[in-house]
Length: 342
Ligand code: GLN
Image (tube, rainbow, N blue to C red):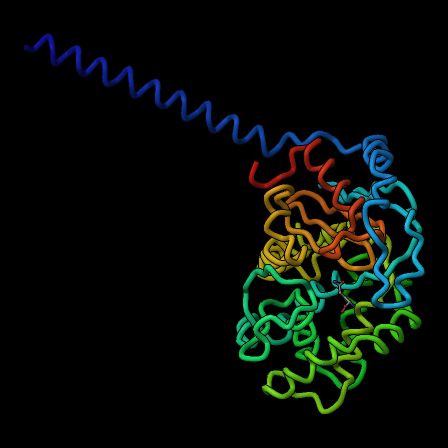
């Protein structure tokens, strides 16, 4: 009997030691996975870009805003800001295009900085969507679904304090800060084109004015939304924006003036659930990273605590996302195992 008990104690100790060993082994593989991102090289980015150079033929340049239709469907650029803040860009790196919906991230940041998250989200939801970006969704009977579809974004911009152009200027200033590029400005011709043809957006603005969500007396707040969409950037600027939100609002050169992990967590969570419009769910399955696209053909991606990615090609799929841009992101994510859920 006594002998049996001794055996059973010894056996238990043996099993315990096994399980401790396997815990240690598990911890080691976990640590290994998160620290061993291979170094991103310019030649790798070039290889991925060349592979997707002709993907533009599978999409169409947006022309519902007539000025956008003038974009060169073949222009393509790919940029990464690495973990250490190094910028690597290939393709048409100097090619400017309008930021469009990606500006909604910055407007959200500015509005939440001023009003606090609660006051902003009292007026809109944290919901994802199966509807296109310009859908009225439940606006007629309730509040905009989220701050990244047009309705919520127009409302977000209208919440930024200041008369006339002030709200827009705050957004522009923040984009210039994040990209460290004071030359960034908006395209007057795209702005005029958006203003002239943005009847759906104007419709949303007035429904929200009717329900008391928007207090503005005139259309200046709506004009600020059109202006923010018309800000011109490069793929490199987008990579810097992605990096900023991936690093608790720290700029790519290490500047921490706006460091705020509450804001970066909020913005990235919205990017994940609504950043690619109604494609967001499937995109999360395939890419698994917070991302935001715009109908100008840009996409910005935040790889949390690691890097920022910016892509550009103006040919869009049916959801309004850049076809080649999406493919380049997917190839990079697979090559470097960047999917958060992998
Ligand atoms: N300015 C565009 C619009 O309001 C932005 C839409 C987008 O990029 N998805 O229609």
